[in-house]
Length: 385
Image 1: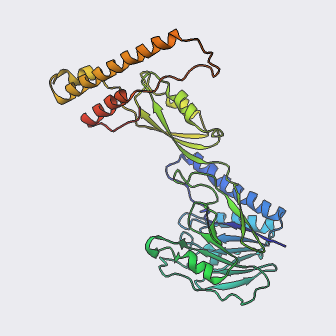
Image 2: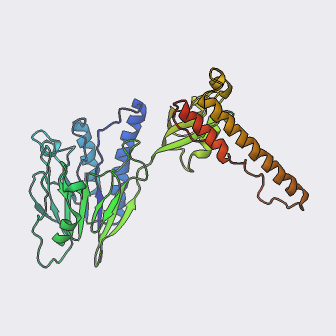
Image 3: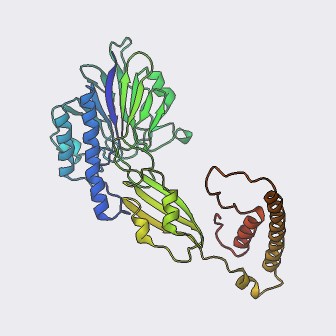
């Protein structure tokens, strides 16, 4: 029969993104604990053999005793065996809550930087702690696994998997060395994105910690049996961080353009809107934009529409004026050709349009060249149409 484990990491309980309003950060803090509770409830429902926490459960610089108490209570309520290793953000130094707080009996904290075998009823966890500072030496080859294992053997550590050049201050480890141990699974922490590499995996941060952590977040449900581990994401985080680019036009409404650009299901998310293109003539109603999702940040990177007549008035014989005149001639020739094609089409039999209103015509190559050329010649940032 398969052995199930809940693998989570990088909760950073106590951390609060400084860029967010205090009320928003406080809500996310509460929802982080709710996400942990939901993941533990799934583990109980599925009769997990263990809950493995691969470091950075706490944010040591900001965590207070009440944070440790909340986590300990959640683990105690689930009643399952819990094994925790510290990470680089919550190292087990002398004053760490891993050493000073009375964790419940079902929780085992492996604090020391030496491989420790934790024998549980249905599996053996080989765990490696973190006591502080940079850890530049690879931890493997490491634990002594039995030559013939009668139950799953799992590694638990906070580490940097296959860093560039094999070097990292965050305990570099190679996928090849993990595979060489013969362990059934390696439960890793440190990388905040979900990643599966052979028998090693990162669950990513339990809930996203900022706009640099987009996508679904949560824990991993892992089934160990014959063959490779079967890894299932558990997306317990309620909200997502999303960055959305919105191209505005002079006559367009920015809120309508943003609404069209947002993916479905964004209402409860944190959105960063990057407004590009031309500034709408009516201005930008940021209040309307902020109503589009639970939390919206607006980065207005639009530019005023180009007044070509004003730009070339002072130097009518200069490079810019000659470029604009040449492109206007090309655009006029293209318009004449398009008109001729339209007259030919009008004489043809009428074909009913079954797809509704046709889309507005895309800008021609010459129109695009005019826009980007003027931006380049006037030292402006190149903007999409």
